[in-house]
Image (cartoon, rainbow, N blue to C red; front, side, top):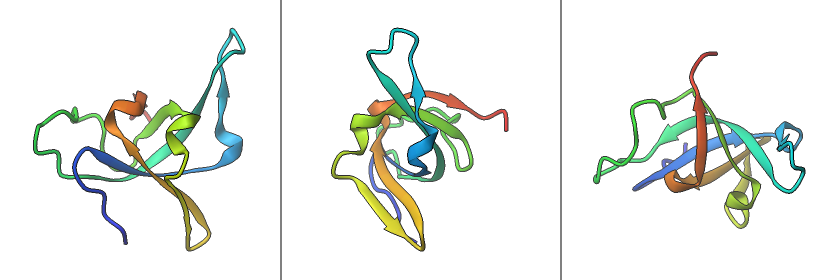
Length: 88
C-alpha cells in the first residue's frame, strides 16, 4: 500500500459522495481516511485517524487522484480538510 508522507492524508472516495452547500456556490467532497502521514510538526489532531470520514473541497483532488485495486484514492493535505466525523 502507498503511504502518505508529511501532513498528507490518504483517502478513498466516490464521486457521488459530494455534498452541496446551501448557497449552491461550493461543494464538499466526502472520503474515508486510509492512512495518515507522519506529522513531524504535530499539526494533525488525533481525530484525523484511519477510518474517519473527512470532508474537503473537491478542488483538493486536482492532480492527486489515483485508482488502485478499483478504488479511487487521493492524497489530501491536512490544511484542505474542512471537517472530520468519527461517529461511524
